[in-house]
Amino acid sequence: MKTIILAGGCGTRLWPLSRKSHPKQFLHIDGQPSLFQKTIQRQLKVCDAESIFVVTNSDYRDIIVEQMRDIADIPNENVIVEPIMRNTAPAIALATKYVVERGNCNDDEPVVVVTSDHHIEPEDRFAEAVIRAGSFAEKGHIVIFGIQPTHPETGYGYIKEGDAVDDSVYVVDAFVEKPDSATAEKYLSEGCYLWNSGMFIFTPATMLAEMKKHCNEIYERSQKTYDEMYSDFPTMPKISIDYAVMEKAQNVLVLPLDITWSDIGSYDSYYEFKDKDDNGNVAIGDVIACDTKNSLIIGSKRTIATIGLDNIIIVETDDALLIAQRGHSQKVKDVVERLQKADSNKL
Image 1 (cartoon, rainbow, N blue to C red):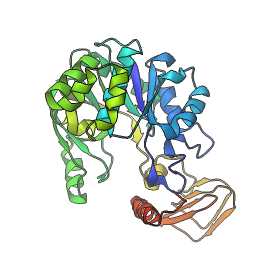
Image 2: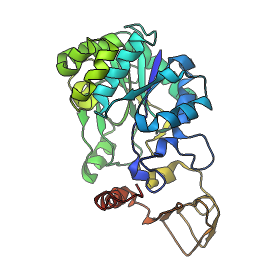
Image 3: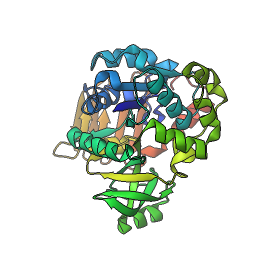
Image 4: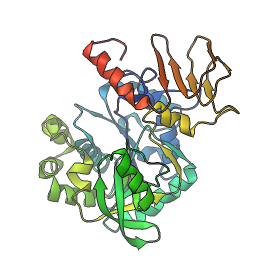
């Protein structure tokens, strides 16, 4: 089995901790390994270090090499640098070409694609699911990992389960865009909808066949050598793997994961999976919380003292301070948009 880790995202939803130069997947928020490093640790349970490949952009290559070195002996040449960002379909096609041509991957060997910025536990249970999904991939299926919803989330895409093909493995009936609140409530109550984790497994032969059927522009370039495909990369269509292949292919299965999962797409989601004190607080750094409850407080260098607060998010860095009410942290994107319009150096 081979692993492809997608590690090119900017992570702006966790501003001000996450910056373009150092996005969330590489952060050591509480002195622990970064999310990227934890991703490597998980994948070492299903394949060896030489079978792990990372797709990123030139801005993050050096930090990836540095963080890999602290975890495992992954060859530096296993870092695949996109010449330009073209979304996930071209990135996955390029990486698949690389692992086949230069990574000793057979056309019928399972390749699992994972993101670099997810929180997943327990790791052993996830590894078992990956290995099980690999057996279906070897039979010509693309298998997506679904997440059992725990609340009516509007920030994720959903997958509707179809007929069962095995114990807890289903045909994908439909992919659904991010719903509004009422629709998300409906999905939760119906019980046949899963969150789309963005992780999946396939064989190169299967993915190439589906590209040929549904995204010929990428397929044609995949017929060239890796070097030629790399040169052509900027001309590839800018399209996600979901739109290019997943939503059109007829051989896609979904395997629900019995794990704790978060894409840490907001400070609210970060708060949810962290251990809390007796007052429901998550405090990182030099924090004095008086008469404060149900809050997330992350300090960098300064002492942060709070009095009489409830359901508050405070994030302090060297050059910025974020204060928000819990439940509203998705609106960090509005702050980022304003900073972008102002051409701020704080991004």
